[in-house]
Length: 248
Image (cartoon, rainbow, N blue to C red; front, side, top):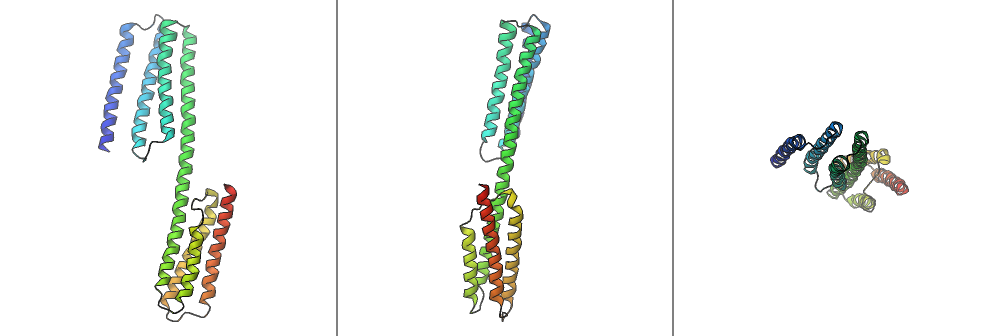
């Protein structure tokens, strides 16, 4: 964190120095005979420097929160660089060398600004959508792993049951565990309701197995109840897998 703040401080100092140098260079060199072109060039260059500075700060703050550099972030840096280069080149060519008409020159700089801004906005929207989708996939994967973990926990709990009929209970739970093992772990936002139903079913099974292990003599139809709960979870999982396959 301190290292990031140190980089931001250095970049800010460079930015301030560049702004001061740019202003004094324009004033001292008399970059253009046309006052309107002079002001347009100065504003455009200062704005380009500010955009580059802003993106550098954004890069430092964003890169510190992710494990690897995003292609969207790299694309934004490339577009920002192209925009800044376009501003400088157009200022030299159209203002200094060709002495383009002030209004046309202002239109060129405005066009460069609009193209750069629109491109950055498109990249930003794409990156936001991709990040949202990735976050949803991560949440769905985490939820599915929680289902698997709870099934494994129920199976381990059943294995500790000191009862001659524990083998039958473990067998049912192991079959259910295998169903989860061979299912696609990545879900879809449209299946959240189905995932929630499955979570409730697994929690109910967990509570039922806990209650079963607490009784010395289980009632006669406990196997039917366990099988019914396991079949309900299996049916929900199969429905979830069918719907997921249809979406892909």
